[in-house]
Image 1: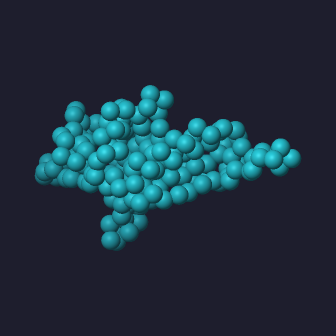
Image 2 (image 1 turned 90 degrees about the vertical axis):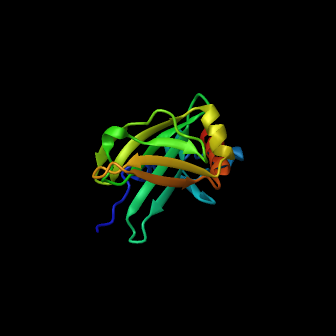
Length: 179
């Protein structure tokens, strides 16, 4: 099997390679912010990059098969309304018409989210979690994703650890709000 990279990291990698984050004049007594940042909070990572005067931060989690193939990647960023939005990439072989459902711990997911597109790195679903859902994510242990196999239509479950999610989200919010 060939190793599959995740396409959503391509834009972030580009961001990390470009420009500095609000570098300030040392004469003002202010410190110079780093041009990029990467931190880990248990099972979640926080990454920031700057383009001109804008800082873009996201939290993410990646899971790999023992062969090194990417199984899933979740990337989220804070939204204006107090929730989070982003993408999840899942492997090929899923029944795309049925979409995926999300639930925190034992809660059942609502209406399934549809796949947006498939790229060489996998199939992408856009995510948008409201503030009440984010509260559940902060207090939960596991985000459960349920999809269906394209050949058998059997459920295929994915589990995303929420260990470190609250701290990573708090850090992402703090970093995103710094000008």
